[in-house]
Image (cartoon, rainbow, N blue to C red; front, top):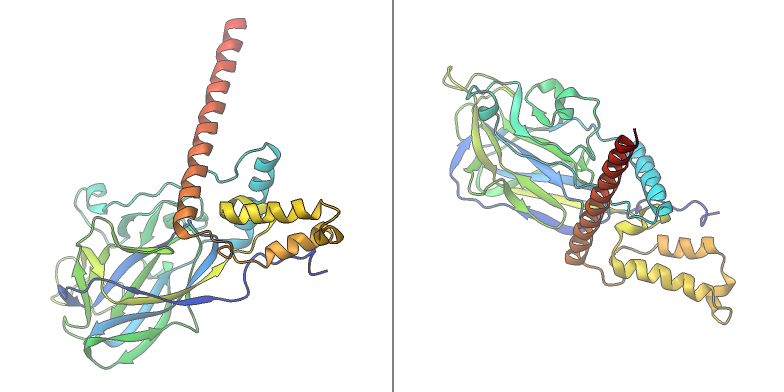
Length: 347
């Protein structure tokens, strides 16, 4: 029965001591920092689990917020399976288009008038963001508190040189592949020395590893969370082009192999699955005594990198799938145009 009901994801969270250490130039201190985080799609990961964020400064009453999750995993999984089965029936790769992803400042869009309605970044990743929230569907990170969820609240003593850990393990931040969520660390301590952050020293991405990207964000100079009035009583409470300073610790929950996601695994893993079935088809092989479901179950229990696939190969494979998909789409469009011209000529 277990072979017939194969799990889609690992029952463990991989804690490989994945700790993001950002650059720390100690450019500024103030009340808070808001920044987007994007989960990358190169590896067969079901989700990332951010279990702590570490910051330094005078700290005080610290809260951590995250944009509400509009990603619907069950619906997306079902749609992915439909696309994969349909593509396989046509002999195609079900990789799909590269999601549209653009990052821009709202000052250009609003004629230089920053409002408190939008974070100011255009984060469009329509392959993974559900359209329940209008602001998220437009690709914006909302500045309204009703679009955010508070995950953490605790008073911390000053820590000027060592990072102080904000433990989110009981209420972690979840990121699915390709998903972008805003993270907001704020202190209501009076004054301007609560949280250390930096000027933007990178184009858009302040940190990147095999699993995620930390993007440039905005600093907050109001002691009230999401407040629109700075501590001196006039002007804009947000500062563009700032970067998070600190540590982010997270784990990854990997996808488990199944037929519907076969092409999202590495070439070596795909070769292993093919070899298992080739052995099963040979009567002299002990594998010939096993039914198909048992072979599928064995492959399902193997981790994606057990046969030598690595991050670089997976990234190259994903780019190749996108390139092939785009070529096939162009060929289909050209074919449709040719049919249209032929129909017009006949008419």
